[in-house]
Amino acid sequence: MNYELFLDHISKHISLNKEEEGQILTQLKNKKLRKKQFLLQEGDVQRQRAFVTAGCVRSYSIDKNGFEHVLQFAPPGWWIGDMRSYITQEPGILNIDAIEDSELLLLSKEATDQLLISIPKLERLFRILTENSLATYQQRLIDNLSLPAIERYNNFCRLYPSLIELLPQKQIASYIGVTPEFLSKMLRQQSEK
Image: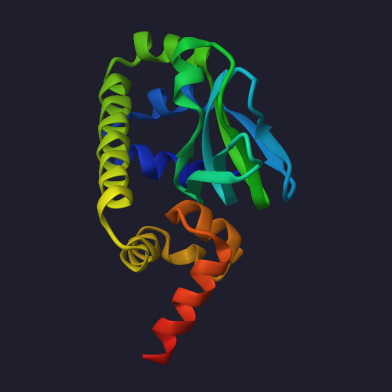
């Protein structure tokens, strides 16, 4: 399992000594997901934070008409979860599954709570991650409300450059809020220019 990626991610925000690193690493659980396997399904309670070390996973909801709405993709080095469910410990509203065979590190809510007491600077880490996530979601909401589809697609390409070739157009279309047919037509018109 790729603990180095996890520790590098943390070190971008806070400094840990070897004892603190060891304390955190002993609390992590490894999880492998096969392509299309769920980490979480709507109605499940999110009981752990999930950090992706290999592969790619996504979070999404399914509306009453059966349409998927992708909220996030998580390539290696990204966290993913149903935060409302995690915080409230109530049934979640998101599905999280693997786009390809993936590996994750899981940190339970109980272990997180204990680590926050024994390593107080972890509060800073999770505050920074939360603030960055909130800022990203606010920008995405504004973009979805005000930008044309081609600009939303270009923003997606900047945010997830490694996923352009990996993902089916259907999932990219869902993320930017258009139908797969519209995305295909838009990209065709763009390439003809």
